[in-house]
Amino acid sequence: MNVSVILPCYNVEKYIERCLNSLVQQTMGDIEIICVDDKSTDKTRDIIQQFANADKRIRAIFLDSNHGPGYARNIGMHNANGEYVSFIDPDDYIDTNFYAVLFDLAQSQNLDVAKGGFFLTDIANGTEHVSKLNKSIDTNQVLFSGEHHSAIYRREFLIKNAIEYPTDVVTGEDSVFLSRLATKNKKIATTDTVFYHYMFNRPGSLDSANFSHAKVMAIISVLNYKVAMLPTINYDSGFIEQHILLNFIYIFNKNMEQADDKKLLFDWLVKHRKLFPNDMLMRHYGNRRARAIQHGNFKRFVSPKRRFLFLFKI
Image 1 (cartoon, one colour):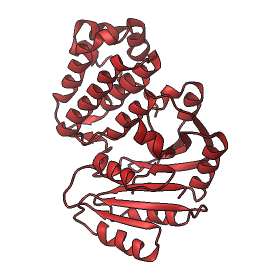
Image 2 (cartoon, rainbow, N blue to C red; image 1 turned 90 degrees about the horizontal axis):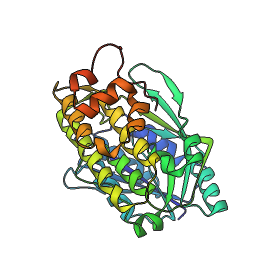
Image 3 (tube, rainbow, N blue to C red; image 1 turned 60 degrees about the vertical axis):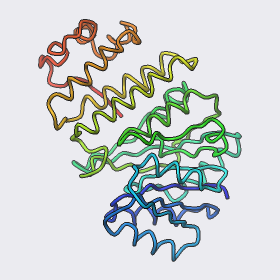
Image 4 (cartoon, one colour; image 1 turned 180 degrees about the horizontal axis):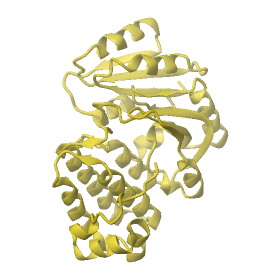
């Protein structure tokens, strides 16, 4: 088996058919598709079973209770047979030659990771754009901090290095997976000839615009995971900037359902400010907000002198 594709599924009856169709239509036939249903309560299970009955490459794993996407992905990875594994979300889809191109790239260069392009669609307003992250990764592999769906990973490499998804957070588990990957020596290459099509701001999804208190606490846990990695690795400033500071900016830009949650995030940043050199804080936040972090001044940090706190591009 060349590639095992792992789908964590939970209440995605409106989207999963498009995703599964993009998988069964892949030009590379030597794949298996592992659908791990996380105790859905809608018709997701029925749709998975229908596809599995029609295509022997599809394997269905139905969990008895809900555990979250990280747990479901780990279950899929440990049940996979492929030389490489890939993780796709059921509300997204991929080009029909996605896995053929990435597997050929991985084989030709004996890669641990082969990453494709990333095409983003904002469901809320219909805007679209192509990510430029691959250019950064080509410069420095440690900058692979997002878009984990758009790659294939050598399964033996992941298992040997204990690179898994955390199971105790409700969102952001993919960024911990990539931070763990970034700390290991690996061979990686990118290509923009095939694309993963990522749909975000879907109502009810974990990446929707409004963040609940539980999601904010999960992101703080994710940030703590990443900080805990620092003493055990030989990292460069790129790891801190890309995996920690930009992760913080991404969540801070979200709308919070509870007004105090931005203060909770700011307090986390102040607590760990000694990790970040002053010039790094100034580069990301500007002189005024860098000083606010150093002095723990939340009001100054969120001062409305500018309309937007940050200009952040995915």
